[in-house]
Amino acid sequence: MTGKFGYFTDVSFIILSSMLVFLSGCKKEEAKEPSRSELLTSTSWSMTINAGIPVADEEDCVCGFRPDRSIMGCNFVQNYSQWSLKDNDEILVLDWDEYEIKKLTRSELEIKYNTFTGYSYSFKAVSSVKPVTIGVTDLTNNSAILHGTIRTNTSSAIVSFEYGTSISYGQMVTATSSQIPPFTITTINASLSGLNPETVYHYRVKVVADSETFYGQDLTFRTFNSLTVNDIDENVYYTTTIGSQIWMTKNLGTTKYNDGNSIPNVIDNATWISLATPGYCWNDNDAATFKTTYGALYNWYAINTTSNGNRNVCPTGYHVPNVTEWVTLAQFLGQDAGIKLCVDGTNASGFSANGGGFRKDEDGLFGSVTGPSYFWTTTEESTNNAFVCFINCSIETFYLDKQMGCSVRCIKD
Image 1 (tube, rainbow, N blue to C red):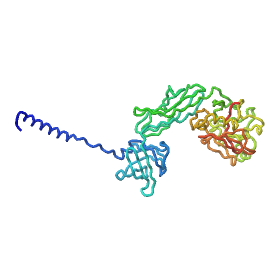
Image 2 (image 1 turned 30 degrees about the horizontal axis):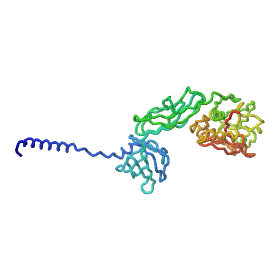
Image 3 (image 1 turned 180 degrees about the horizontal axis):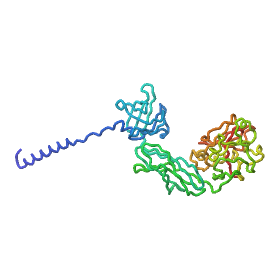
Image 4 (image 1 turned 135 degrees about the vertical axis):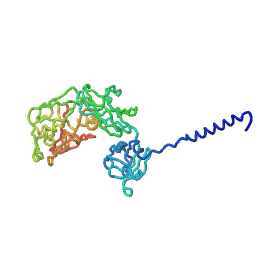
């Protein structure tokens, strides 16, 4: 084309053509789909279906497939330690077991054990860190140890506890395991000292990961009273006030009545099961191991004033409670009373129930101290049976044979 603007028209055409060539050369590549290995290691996985059965608790079974091919433990089938992929990434190998991958996206995982006859397991992605405030142990009138757990995801986390006399907290203590690596479920604790006696404290786990902050639930504990009490053997017991009652915070461990008379120490099983008179023992007949933490085990005749010569097994000013006094305790604490009483729960009341075991009436054998607590009451059910207070994650009363060996917890008169 010729004319006044012909030159410019040719130049414009050349420039436009060059731009088209340049733009076509810089065409944006489509995003690459992540590999199955990348998908597996991109998050933690919470089980939703366990062999066809729905899993209600999201935290009941959480797995993590670490980039180094190790596994964050998951309690399905068994605890595997290593993972890998095979057969074009169609098979997930957990240690020696092979699972067909039925579905794997950024949010869902479904695997099947044994393609033809095995069970299927489904998971969903869980992206957040999970801190859990658990409870308190080793309480005194001015110290405590706080406990919790942390589940991390793809990032490491810095862990501490906040605490104070209100939900504003105001103080912080670093956890013993203060920096938790990715894909880990870790038990944590922290020791507090310099606390005020007879004071309710709030506390919770605090976690910082990827510049985000996560908190466990708020819990409380009450430090013991300044008041302590000694038994006739000079064992010292802290006390705690729960409602209108004052309780010793440790199982009784005396070998004598408070008038100085000895309680028979019965070691032999045959003698124990035939007793209709007072007797005591240590779990497994091992005072060195069990006395300090768990106290002694007594048959009911040892704590009953009619059968023991009108003597008091508790320190002066204290007594063995009856059923009504245990019911009063449970009613004051209300919902989750058992959890508030146990060191395996929150121990929010400071009661610090921690097992103690028992000794059977039919054969004289012992029960484990790591189980629930069985405390005698003075209340009879019949000639042969008397009521105990059972504390685990619940609190209830029922009766046992009077020849059973159970713990004793004393209450102030």
